[in-house]
Image (tube, rainbow, N blue to C red; front, side):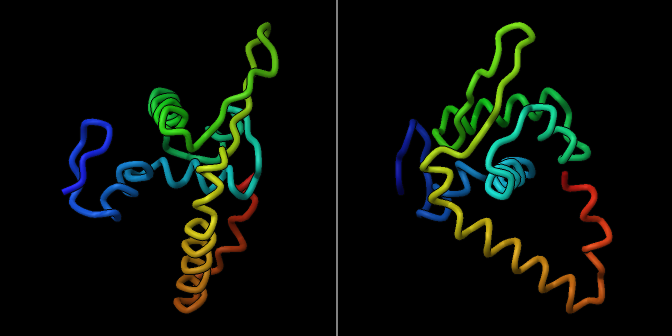
Length: 121
């Protein structure tokens, strides 16, 4: 057993999933990987189905876990940008592998993923 931040994990994979698990965290990290830097609004627009509360919570957790950095652009109006930290960037092979695997799977099953590319601004 592995104990980290007052949590017990069964193996290194479990540790990794503790940081990126759930429906939204990996998607947020992946968007930041491909887009470099995004505002809260841009992230929300590219994650259909996520509530504002959930996005805010997930970003706070990713920031707490040092995978994402938040830069305040202006105080009035309040504007911030999110980007991957060095720790977040170190997961780049994971984002690229998962994206490539997904593209290959869609191609093999005759699904035209390109038609929906306009969704990813």
